[in-house]
Image (cartoon, rainbow, N blue to C red; front, top):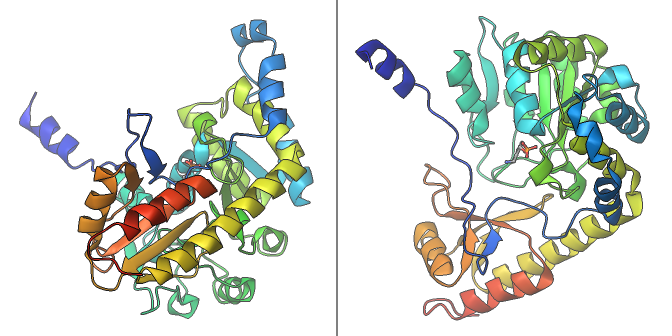
Length: 355
Ligand code: PMP
């Protein structure tokens, strides 16, 4: 390969996803998947699916799913965009709105895909430091027509902002596209979706991967003013004019319609999270308040990398980031009650951890 091309390829720095181990007996608490199966209504929809229809292309507008999402969120179908996981929706968002002269503003600790997209698409960006307690201070995000993005709740910290703070940001920043990534919002934070009806520069991105337990089907969506949705459609059509396959559309509709199952599993995860926080604190961890399906915790004396290795050796996978400011923290996804009990029992057996 010519040197020109090999150098160019080395500059494409990809996102490194959390590990998906082959071994079945590992307790996976590293990628914030839902420990419970998808809704029985989803299983039924997939079983009933007429496989002969797979000969055909899916609906390029995914109307059934957009309509179900619009009804669920009390908005119009024209306010909804769907894509192959929220990662893809975010990728299109970066391409459509953030290629400006001014820098895109984002927190210095957030979802690490954001800087990957910036580097891929040559987008200038500026990282705004979190406060000492790992919260986002939106007052630090001044007017910029390069755009603003943050996750609410933030990842990997789990901390959430109040809607009033987001609305104040929107009032101060009328020219910038403001993207709120709400991948974890269903676990106890307030969604900004209603604000999309009043602020035409706000785009809210959500996913079926966490609270709907459908990470394997890859369904993400964005909600906002029809002009923003149009911008996303234009980019999407240049990549792949079919946003979702037929099975994903059917399963997505069934998942949205089963409100009772959604509530019971998210409530269960929230209760398990609170139990886990208390147990971790009793074992000497400092745990940030979480509005997500994970906790972000640091032991008072022990190093994050060492603890991750210890847990791994004992069959539990958690996420550790070798990054400044957070390299002593562990991000631990909330599993079933039994899995979290196993985590606590294992930590308790660590020679340097005393309850
Ligand atoms: N945003 C945040 C903050 C995330 O943590 C994730 C999951 N890694 C995503 C978006 C992407 O989720 P998905 O592509 O599965 O919808």
